[in-house]
Length: 129
Length: 287
Image (cartoon, rainbow over the protein chains, first blue to last red):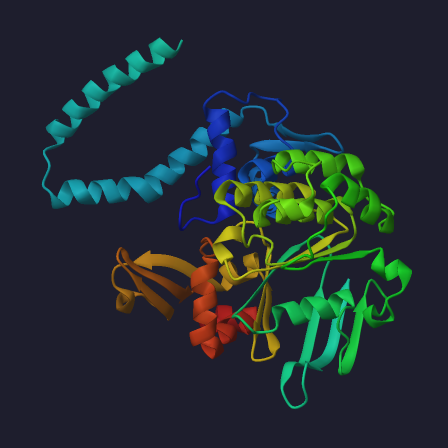
């Protein structure tokens, strides 16, 4: 895994875990890698992974069973989508809208691009199935 | 776990390497020991390991005095020097002979580590390349399972895949009751591995702080125009703009850039330390 330059490592690890859940690789109530296993895989300090797991517990993405490890929480995917959506709306969308405003892009063009993207996205999804 | 109080040490009179040094290290962490060449990194490790004795001050390691070199102490601390004396033994024989000094030595784990490091267990250590022999010794250090592991420039001489393997091995090895100190001047090798930073400068430890503490006080960012940034502490130019350290007044999380941070400490020591040592409650009100 390549770490990005500026975001805190523990948040990037949390995002990595979230990614596995969103991709459907880890499902509700699945056991996820132990702190040590993930530390080895990502070449990071185990205390940093611990911090990421604590963060994920606080936002109800994973939970711990004493002595048995960490598991994906019920409805983790919905919860993740909700969190990501909030992030997108507050952090990313304003930047995008600013560009659209600055370049005076016609919203019909955006809509057109969105529609054609939706089609290819749908195709991709169907091929995966 | 390790407590050094007011330690001074000189190899020759009038030229102290360490002076009035205080240091407390706790279990469960990987400490990165940084300092310029000749700053005294090795001397500090040797003090902890009981291989050099302080001229003044006291050292307590696991409740024992290193200079006494008691058997219990020697069984609990392992120092991997930057350069080990080449042995004509194979890795396996070396472990059989020297592992006996460490009650918790884990033969099976040693073999596994050699395999992960791609080191031939039957080849004499002095017939190996520098990097291969070094990896064998790193494997030995981990396999001792002692509570304090001190490593002096362990990544020196390792190729890129081996450095990667080194990080994996260390990340998987640390136990809660264990402590590792890794000295290095190649900070990038260990960037995400160390959770505490020790910086040695002017014969003393000028910084002993967790990465979390540093990023809670200092915001690391890349920018095109440092003068535009509020609370600028330090800026370092590159082709793609500047890496800057800012006062973290809004509690943003950023990634510790150890190399830039180290440079900042060397050139803007007072300002950077002031921000790190500031009382957090005052900080909130005044900022």
